[in-house]
Image 1 (cartoon, rainbow, N blue to C red):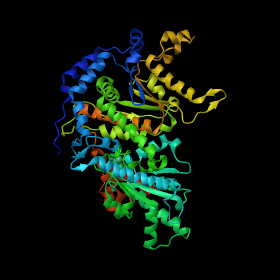
Image 2: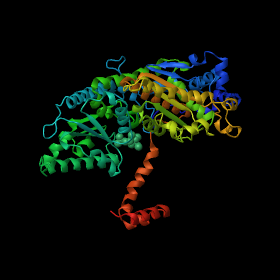
Image 3: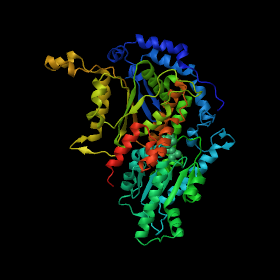
Image 4: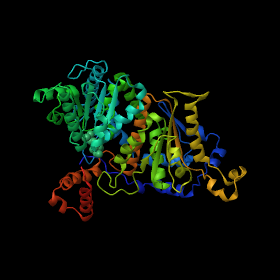
Amino acid sequence: MADQPAPIDVTTTSVWAQLQTHAAESKPDLRAWFDKDPDRAERFTLQAADLTVDLSKNLIEDQTVELLVKLAEQVNLAERFEAMLSGQHINVTEDRAVLHTALRRPAGQEPELVVDGQDVDRDVHDVLDAIATFANKVRDGRWVGVTGKPVKTVVNIGIGGSDLGPVMVYEALKPYVQEGLEVRFVSNIDPADVYEKTAGLDPETTLFIVASKTFTTLETLTNARLARAWLWEQLSARGIIDDSDEARTDAVSKHFVAVSTALDKVEAFGIDPTNAFGFWDWVGGRYSVDSAIGTSVAIAIGPDRFAEFLGGFHAIDQHTRTTPFAQNVPVLMGLLNVWYTNFLGAHTHAVLPYAQYLHRFPAYLQQLTMESNGKSVRWDGTPVTTETGEVFWGEPGTNGQHAFYQLIHQGTRLIPADFIAVANPARALQDGGTDVHALFLANYFAQTKALAFGKTADEVRAEGTPESIVPARVFSGNRPSTSILAPALTPAVVGQLIALYEHITFVQGIVWGIDSFDQWGVELGKKLALEIAPAVTGDGLALADQDPSTRLLITKYLQMRTN
Ligand code: F6P
């Protein structure tokens, strides 16, 4: 086990009790708070790189922030952040450094980062250079398939962090994608996924990237084999290759590359290690889109834009490292999540992008936050001492407005929500004389206003509403939200948003004393799937071995199978 200080039991700190008292005594009243305090909006609106972050519609007073900052100090947050940046093995249960922040350090930073004898800066930049060279080759048509044709479609095969990051960023940065290039993403082991994503593709112009940190993940390796079989079948159906090993190996070398920390396994799969981009065990899967795992993105938007993307992350790393806690956006947002989860009883947290290109951001955040902080033990193996890991969820506005916002506005649960928007759309359209994006953002502004200030019964009555339905039309207000506004959805801003939530997640993990960088909770299901597979494919003994419920379900499944 890594040599790290024991986690501090946050519930035993003096400030925890003060926060409890404060939560019990505080009577959230955003209308009154804004009325009494003309500077509230200004004071609670902060800047982190290009992100303007308005915290003023949260259920906080100055005292709340003071106490939360004290809480961060009492759990040694700054020291733990430095421990991460410097490469200490803060991923205790896996005895590993946690260095995703090193992936975006600009070249030539002083002092150099050497961790466990490894010159991290040099290794990172060597791989970035190799990715840039490769991406340029694909983009300008120098990388060709077996028939000499350039690549038109890249298919990234990965799952979890090897999928969600790249697909989210690709979608977010679609306006920057080189014309004539498309990236598709295969992740699910449901064969429908690989079937649909290869449908209509020209094998001669398709490049597969097999992205897997471990290169052992069942879903990814199965899909990679299916894709390889598809390639061989398609090329041979066109008479381009025969069934010889030589021809097949040649096809794989021109149509498959890999991204992994396990280059030996890449080679065993049949991919030439010279066509593989490495990274390191100190990059967690859900923290890896800025490593070689982002190769599909680097191809799509180009190395220069990819560098800007990394620059965005770094700007937030610097902000987090150097800004006093009281103005530090990731620190305060992480502490606010603690406030809502541990003192005000929230169980979930909505993330609502008012930017269609961010439509996969909530899904991406689900892995980042919930795989990181969904834990019941602390990093020394002792049980957690308070609630951890709220459920993150969301959909882009305005779609969400017409689906689940009812519950956020008038339901019985407290749901803190982050609203994210950009001022300048990549696609500006007019409807008659109306700027449609401005209309879209009117919704963004309106929703947080409605949540914060609500509508009283008197206001409802004043509209002439019949008394019997006044209660149904009252909005309580005092429903917390954070508004994030950026000038545009540039590569840098997307990097900033990701780094923001990475560090929010870190802050919460430190407060709760948990290792936010392991994911043992996904192991049991994976192991059982392998054990159950024979029963599902007709092995009677394996079926008999199952518990009664699982046995019954599998039996029903076998009876239903018609093909
Ligand atoms: O779901 C567990 C997990 O290990 C994730 O943490 C990871 O992102 C994903 O599987 C994929 O892993 P790999 O990149 O090794 O294929």
